[in-house]
Length: 109
Figure 1 (tube, rainbow, N blue to C red):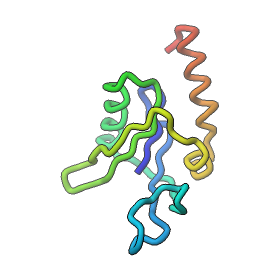
Figure 2: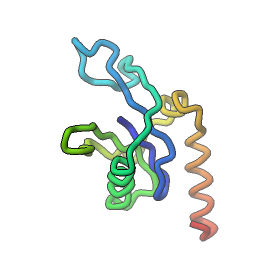
Figure 3: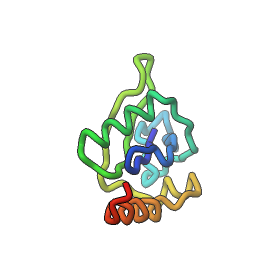
């Protein structure tokens, strides 16, 4: 799963699936993976937000997997791609990042 975090909020989330799971385990959209919107639990949201905050980032793409032990963090990407998640969720996340940056510059966040 990939969660897109801006500030202290998960703004979008997708689940990526490999195009050919019996041959290729990677689900990257650039490799032909397919994405669907995902609903996250509070535990999953908290993991993603905490990871971004601990790294001192203002926004990031957070990759994790679900397990019987709960969500397991894979990666925090400080320069995430926008195209795939925006297309899947129909959200303009680039604009949301800009608005967030503007609010920081104006001291509103």
